[in-house]
Image (cartoon, rainbow, N blue to C red; front, side, top):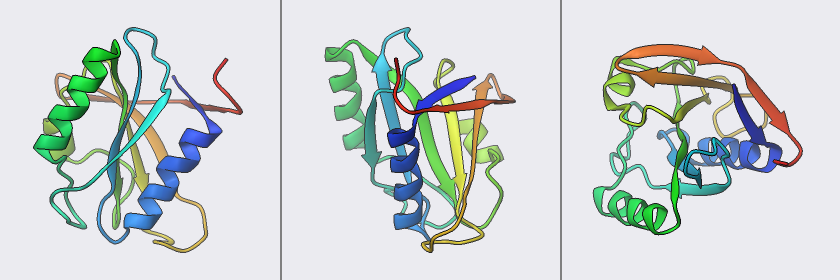
Length: 142
């Protein structure tokens, strides 16, 4: 199960809506081994595409150096789908390299940049196997 605070949930959704019609992407880091998504990091989709996301390699390297220095790891790796459901594509599954991370997908297909609900789902992806998990949204992480 993914436990996420309301502010982080809201930040991920806002990023997905703002970048629509292109896919948004980012990471929420937390203390190593804690499974606590604490530090929201909005990334730029270097692909600039409505059907694909790609972290900028320089930005990603810098982020991993920061996380290493802070004893953090990626707890959530998120991106949006702009025209399809919030389910990992074959490309998404192939890119999933963090076995401990929650892979969050947000679909903005129904409302785009406008107000309205999004589809927000979380998965574990390990060795190509996709398992959907429950999401518990809390006011604050305790």
